[in-house]
Length: 145
Image 1 (cartoon, rainbow, N blue to C red):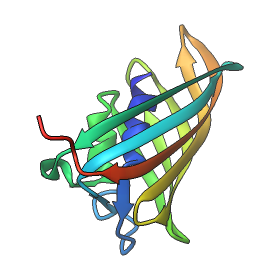
Image 2: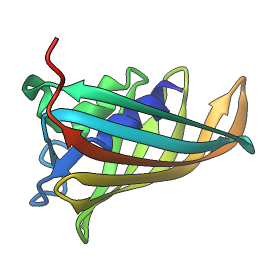
Image 3: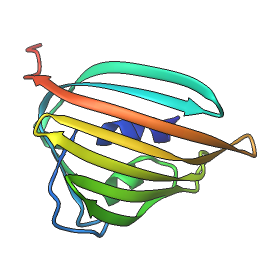
């Protein structure tokens, strides 16, 4: 599930669209309070989650390449292509959760992002199909602690 959780993080991004290599495909994060939700089907079993989190400015910029490395599953991103107001990409992981996904990330506005991915992941030695959709919306400044 770490792959899915990390893919959700991508949904927080506001994008710059000038490059197609994973290292150059930079993701710009809008610091602040974000509400996200995802709907996932894994091996025909649906589940979902919703959360609101504060994203600090120190985490405001990273590449798709770094995102893949942060998954901790020996992942890499390939086939990165600008697509309208976002990117399409392939994520390949060879760690405990090994598999491959085709994904798209769309910027719907400066404060709303959508991520979709589908593919197969190995679970207990068996291939399982999955489909994933995440939506994220910036909801304001982080609350004062």
